[in-house]
Every structure is written in C-alpha cells, then in structure tokens.
Length: 136
Image (spheres, rainbow, N blue to C red):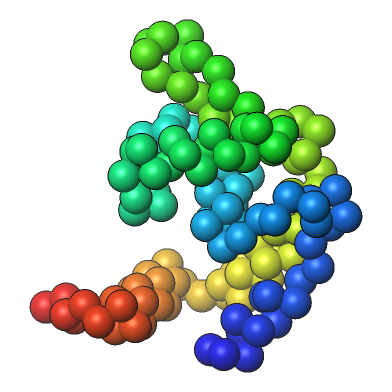
C-alpha cells in the first residue's frame, strides 16, 4: 500500500495546475466531477463525506481560481450545479487519467463479485486506519 500511494503521489501535476496549490481534498472533488460529470453541491458533499458548507467552501476556492464553474440548476434555481471549467479540463484529465486507467486495467478481468470484494476490502482498510469498528 505505501508503494501504491507513493507512486500515485509522484504523478506530475500538469503545468497549468502547478500554481494552484491543489491538495488531496481537491483531488477527490475533481475526480468526482471528471468521472461522474456535473454534480450539485449536496451530491459532492455526500460523496466527499463532508458537510455541504465544507463542500461549498472547497468549491468556492476552486471557482475563484478558475478551476470550477457553478451555475443554477434550471429545474430548481435554489440548487447549484458544479462542473470543471472547460479551460482546465484538459490539464485535469491529463493529471487524473493515468490513475483511472490503471484502476480500469487492474479491475478489468475481475468478475463483479471479485470487484465488490476488492472495494469492500479497501473500505475495511480505510475504516481500520481511521480507527473505526469493523462492519459486522
């Protein structure tokens, strides 16, 4: 596991993103938007497992840097839809696509049951590192 994390950390940040001081908290948010498409603030908060106010602060920070765009949801004007800014998408894709491709390749030959076991194992590891009780 340390080797896996070490290699992922060595993936170079593309030049257009280097001055933005992006950290792990930004990486998760950008990954969700890149791979799942536009999401609401509440959807992002749920996926990141943070409060909506925390997600909103992260989104605001990245919006001010020109990385993200927020727009009103046409179906519900109270909701905001968040997307990656078109000008930043190529650099973010370059940065994150190697990891996504590696996961797809690693999981490609597994059955759905084997993939689920793998995901469940990673989640159990995450809970253990966090000091949480194992699920029954």
